[in-house]
Each structure stands twice: as C-alpha cells, then as structure tokens.
Amino acid sequence: MGLANLRDPGFRCEAAMEYSLWLWTPLSNAPDAEAERRRFRVTHPFHPLFGREFDLVDYRHCWAEDSVFYVDETDQLRSLPASWTSAVADDPFVVLSGGRSHFRVADLVELAKLIQGEVR
Image 1 (cartoon, rainbow, N blue to C red):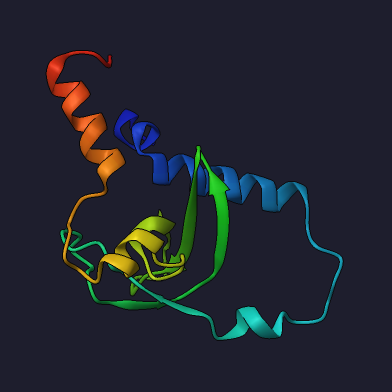
Image 2 (image 1 turned 90 degrees about the horizontal axis):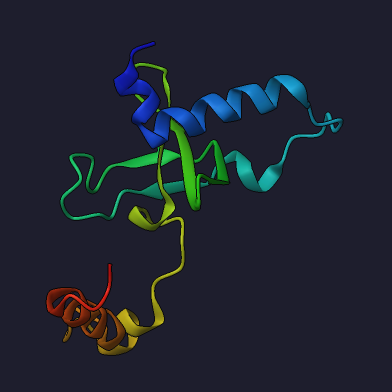
C-alpha cells in the first residue's frame, strides 16, 4: 500500500467499506430485490468511463460525499462520486434550463468572488 493509495479518496472509502463490512454483517438473509438489478451510467463528460453502465453494488456517504460502488471488468470493487453518475436525480436547475445554461447563478457568483479574492 503506497502513499498514493492513501491519498486517493476512493481507496480510503473502499478500505473503510471493507473494514465496516468486516465489523458488521446484516442479519437479513433475504436478497434485496431492488438492489439486485440497479444499474447506473457514468455521466461526467470528462471521465474515461463516460457513457459506460455498471451494476450498482452499494450507494454510501463516504468522505463528505455520496459514492456509488461497482465491480469493474477486473473484478475489483471501485467507487465514483455519485454526482458523476446517473444514480442521483438530475439537478432541478439543469432540467428547467433545458441545456440553455451551463452554469448556475450561485456558482457564477461564487466564481466571481474567488476571482476577486474575497473567498479563500
């Protein structure tokens, strides 16, 4: 385990998930019918897996953000921020704007403050 792995938030979340699974196992022996076939698509336009679909293994709040867990083609458990996938509901602003605006007003105001040096 190198230092690069410890700095990777996905790695820390996966390690925490494995540890928590070791400490606690659900008592139910009935399969979760809803979780059985849930799938998600990577929607972040600059991610190398953009457009790919995966079976959702788990959806958890890890390291200050929601994450989706999936098994990749090498049978490794991986995670992505849920906001980069179709696993979360669409932003109401994006839906209402109908693609006419790439930025929300609140985000533009925050950007302007950052440029002017008001926010650190």
